[in-house]
Image (cartoon, rainbow, N blue to C red; front, side, top):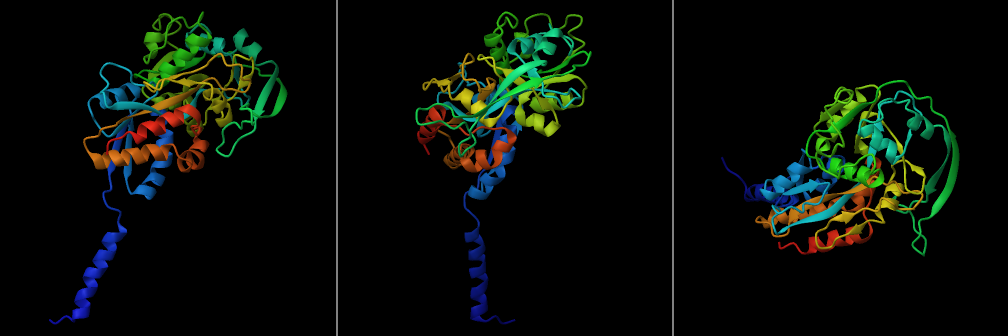
Amino acid sequence: MKFSRSRLLVVPAALLLAISATPAHAADLSGSGATFVQGIIEACKSGYNKKTNHSVTYTGTGSSTGRTNSDRSIGDFWFSDDPHLGSTRRATVVNLPIVAAPIAIMHSLPARTQLYLSPETIAGIFSGQITKWNDPKIVAENNRTITEVIYKKDSVGNVLKDKNGNNVVLRNVQKNIRYTLPNQNIRVFYRSDGSGTTSNFTRYMNATAPTIWTKTANSTFTTSFPGDINAAGIKSRFVGASGSSAVSLNTANTKYAITYAEESFAKRNGLKVAAVKNASGTYVAPSTPATSAFLNEATINESTGGVTYKYDTTEKGAYTLGIYSFMMLDLEPANKEKGAAVKKWAEYLLSEDCIVKEGTAEGFTYLTGKPRTFAEAQLKKMKL
C-alpha cells in the first residue's frame, strides 16, 4: 500500500494540534478536613478545573482529621475551622484564613415563622437547660417588637463602608413579631466528631453566655458540655452525628430539632435558620453583609494566622456567629508542581470568580482586610 508524502505529514500535525490543546502538568489535588468548607469547594472546583486543568478531590471528615492529615502529609492541602497551633504542626505548614461564612442555628419547626434566639437561650438549649420549644424564654424572645438592620452591599456582597470606614445602613425595619411555639421537646443534634465548627460554637457560647455555658471551647461537644450529657432527660433528646452534613440531614428528618452548622447545609436540607441577638440587642439573621460586618472587627495574629473574634461588638447589624476556616498548606512542598497547583487553588478560593459568582449563594463571604492581606502574603512565600 502506498501513502503520499502529504498524507504522511497530516497525521503527525493533527496529533501535535491535539497535544498542544491539552494543558500540561495537570495535577490531581486531594484535600481533607473541615466539613464547613465543603459547600464552597464543591461550588468552585469546576471553575478551578476550567481555569487550570487541575482537579480537586476533598473529603470532609472534620477539622481534627484535617490537622492530623496535615501532620502526616496525607494529601496536598487541609482545612480546619480552628488554626492548627499544636506542637505536632510541621514547621513549614501555615494557617491561612481562606474561607469565611456564618455558623447557622438551624431548626425543623414546622411553621415558616422566623425564629429569634439570644445567646443565653441558645446556650440554654444546647446545655439541656431549656427542654421545650414553648419555654417562657423562647416565647418572650419571639413575641415582642424588634428592629432589624439592613446594610447596603458593596460590589462583592459585603457590607458597604463610607469614606470614614463606617458601615452603611440602608434602613432600619421595626417589626412586631408573634410566634405561637409548640409544646414539644427540643431534639438537639450535635457533632460527635472532632469539629472546628463545634470549637467555634462552644467558644461563642462561653463568651456570650458564660453563666450558662460554663466550660471553655473544645472541638468535642461532649467535652465542652457544661453538665452530664448522659443524664436522664438529656440523653434521650441529644444525638451526636459525624459531620455538618449528617447533623443537618438528621435535623431535617426529625420534627422539632435544632443543630449548628454552616449556613449552606440549611439551604440544602430545607431547614430554617434563627436570627441571633448580638451585644447591641439587635436580632440578626445570617447573611453575607451581616457576617462581614462582624468579621471586619476580628483581629489576626500575623505570627500564627489565628483570628480573635469580637463577640461584644456594638455594631447593630453584625451576625456574631461568623467564622473563618483555615487552609493549611506547606510553604515548602516536596512536589513543586503540586505545590504550585495548591497555591493556585488557594488563590482561586479567594477570588471573586469563586466567592462572588459561586459562593455567595451558598452563604460564603468574600474576604477583605487584614486576613486577606495575610493569606496573600503567605502564599507569596511558597518555595516553588
